[in-house]
Amino acid sequence: MSDIKVGIIMGSSSDLPIMQAAADVLNELGISFELDIVSAHRTPEKMFEYAKNAHIKGLQVIIAGAGGAAHLPGMVASLTPLPVIGVPVKSSNSIDGWDSLLSIVQMPNGVPVATVAVNAAQNAGILAAQIISCNNKTMLEKLIAFKEALKQKVNKASDDLKK
Image (cartoon, rainbow, N blue to C red; front, side, top):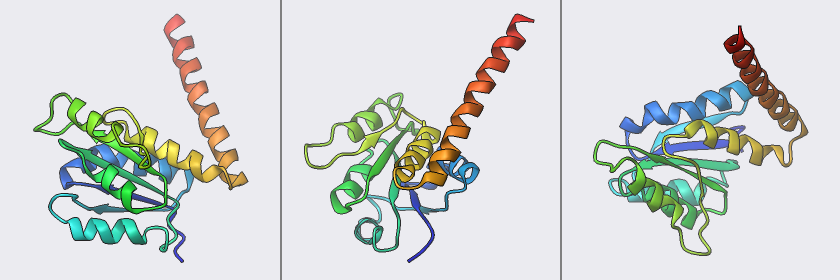
């Protein structure tokens, strides 16, 4: 088993600038992850293999980003017992990202995909950490400190604005 806890996958290399935010927050929290391009439409065999074996590799959560028709998160969720977090990506052929958002969030009963806002990969990384923290006291403490830092950042911005 690997020490990698989170799989971050995306349908295309053009999604990487958005999905990097998930990787950045996981790095900040000290959670190991892997990044890969896994297209539901162009590499379906790779997607099947990835999704079916993710839990065997030791992954605990999968973050899947996709634009346009955005089938990747739902298809992966249909094949894995792991929680899947979908990141709708506003792509060049997208209608303001709504097509991607609706493709991910409108999953049928029995195939849940936790879905964050369009291009909100940072939230996907935080949610993955929160899922992992359910059974990891050290991660829970890191998340508490992370959220406290967010609070302090807002308080500082408020104080600066009042000056």
